[in-house]
Length: 283
Image (cartoon, rainbow, N blue to C red):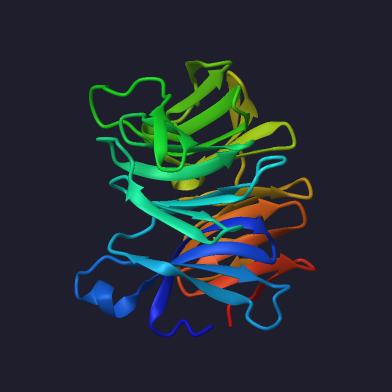
């Protein structure tokens, strides 16, 4: 797949060789025209591992997620800052476009268990209840000052976590949100839930570890602003704009763990970590 005139925006990972992603045309961006197109990479499809979906939109996709409920069909969702969404039913290839009914700027969408949640500014949390249907389920929407969530995750719908501006970290226990003392005031950018713990990362190399109402700062090995975090085979991997461990790159966007590998998305390349090294797969 030729990346000369386009750049990756975001992705949703179903497995190391099964990745949905969004791209934008660079020439349109230079003209001031936001745009996104949507694709899937299936490594096992030897004839055409990269396939493009039909819809093109005039907004930049800022986050994607996918779920496959037990006994149900896979769903893929991409969102824009202002609530625009693209939704895909892969089994039927039906694409749905629309706008989520929210007045808040959105920052991230994530699959948690068999549900999809979105989060954003003013501590908004939205739960998908159907195709194009989202219901507010956050802690405090209207709040003084600049507050907001940059990431959301959890061990299931009864135990959610959201992290964001000024070191804010919140925990939802059986439907009730509680603010947790994070011990930091830097902006937290991402979190992941793995091996029975929650890991959150943010500016100045901050890495937090804990669960429920107890978190502590642990050494990340860097003072760079961290954009993402993933756990694979018991090891915590943190990502800055240019580095994951000993791997150096440019404009790194997402780091995602699956049951059998790590996926790394950069503006101009897509990588899978195999045999201890990140190898490009989007050629």
